Length: 267
Image (cartoon, rainbow, N blue to C red):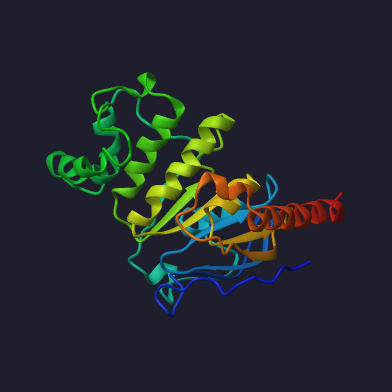
């Protein structure tokens, strides 16, 4: 079952995708994980990978970050092979990974410091963004003093400030309670346009996928294949009330039906 996009995927650069996977295969020992996955991310897009647990979503991220080499297939960045590109992606994992002995200001500058930026210069780069991320009053706080949502904002700021053209977000709000997760989704939608990055997001949350995405790729259970590509033509910036619109509901129902169908085939 394959769903056709309702509108053409957004192409802010008018041409070559920022990121493209072509027929990527991978296996761990004798367990096949990816079965010819093909997808792309245009400059300025937020694209979501949606699929059941254990289907191989995180393996795709491992390939993109270079920690795993695909068994077959091609990964292109701006049209060039990943291995030949100097591009490095900013990654936000499922957990916030804040260091408990470092204050907020020192956690959010950590990625820059690892790249060789001095602490003074890293702080200068981070400071203008603290208010946008709602952290300006918490710079001296330790992670244990923050709420779950604040910790995720700090982790996202640490990712954004690395100034990469592609951000990989792996279930960034999955550990949060439902109300906090909704708040974070709404906040991310409100500020994402200022980042200037293309975003590839992994999630299990169908509503999150619809609310945040320009397009959604649905993966089958392992070994993963792309079974549907659904475009989300909702206008931006999106608001919480958009969740109740007929277009939003129709797309959410379509995704639920696709997932139910593939679960039925693999039952």
